[in-house]
Length: 307
Image (cartoon, rainbow, N blue to C red; front, side, top):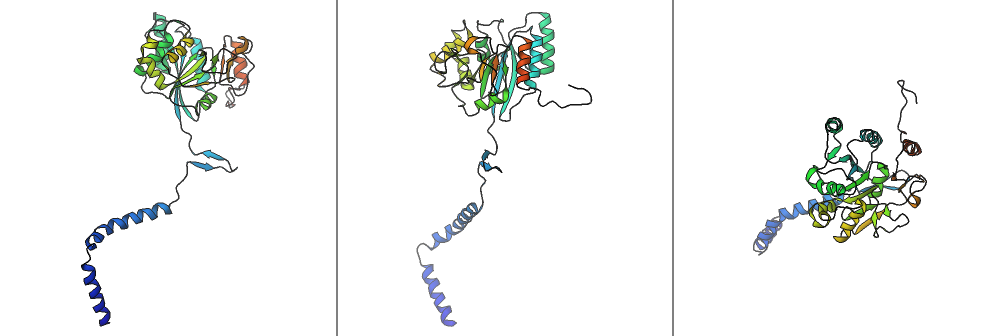
């Protein structure tokens, strides 16, 4: 026992004279902590961004949401059309997108408009009034896009311009946009009707989408500012081409189209994967479309009514 104790004393004396002793003692606590963290991390199972469903398919745990503003360009006196469209879009939604639908007007011009539109604003808060005179091809679309960065409370991933005679199916629209780029994007129904090349000509005014960076650019650039008179949908493509913008262009054919029989080759029969149907001028056309897509499928019977 005494020999062992003497040996330990000799070892400690030698160790005490080692030049790296103080360094080892200094880093030992830090090294212990690092090793603990290392083993802890590798002992914990990190959940992946995907989960397997019961049928052995892989699904997203949580889909990445994006935002879309749909501006429906219409006229102040179209009270009935706005109320009808509120019903059509108010019962639609998408699980992958935050979608705001707004009605876009130019300046109100009489007492009737100020009172009736004022009531709409108080009740629904879904109207944008631009500083312009009502028009179709004299700058309203430019005023709409260029004003948005100044008047909306937040930027959107995408902004859409749509007509008030188009039926948009919000869930298929969102699904078609989800995999697309969030920057430098121009999306819609490419003209001419037979074309599938979104880099030639322009997207129809029935409804086209721009990414927010392009909306910002329209508000800042002199290119659109100095070229606002003419067919509004064609002008937008001219701006983008002159500014070398919108390298990401997509056409949603055949999911976007004109109502059957209304516009030659731009029209075809209704199809299940529809994103938009345009040129709905009559109530019987709207009835056909809404019935085809079973727009009231979530309807529940009640003792208060029988349909």
